[in-house]
Image 1 (cartoon, rainbow, N blue to C red):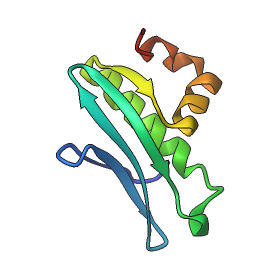
Image 2 (cartoon, rainbow, N blue to C red):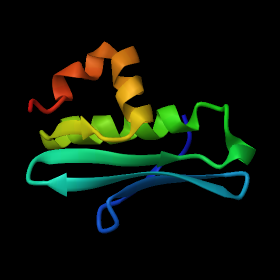
Image 3 (cartoon, one colour):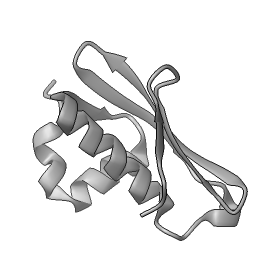
Length: 92
C-alpha cells in the first residue's frame, strides 16, 4: 500500500509515486461521502494505486460513521469487487 495523505479541507486523498500525484476527491454532504473522482497519471498506472486510494477513503468513511455514494465509476467498481464495503453504500 502506498503512503496516502488525507486533506480534510480539500476533501482529497492523495499520494506521490515517482514524482507523480494520484488522487481521490470527494464531497461531504452531512454524513455522506460522495466519491467523485479517482485519478492516477498514466506514468504510474497499473500499480494498484487507485485501489489503495479508494480503500483509504472507504476505511476513513467507516471510521467516521459515514455512508458512501460512489459517483466515480472506478470507486463503484471497486466496491462491487470488494463486498466487505457494501454496507457503506448510501441508500437512495
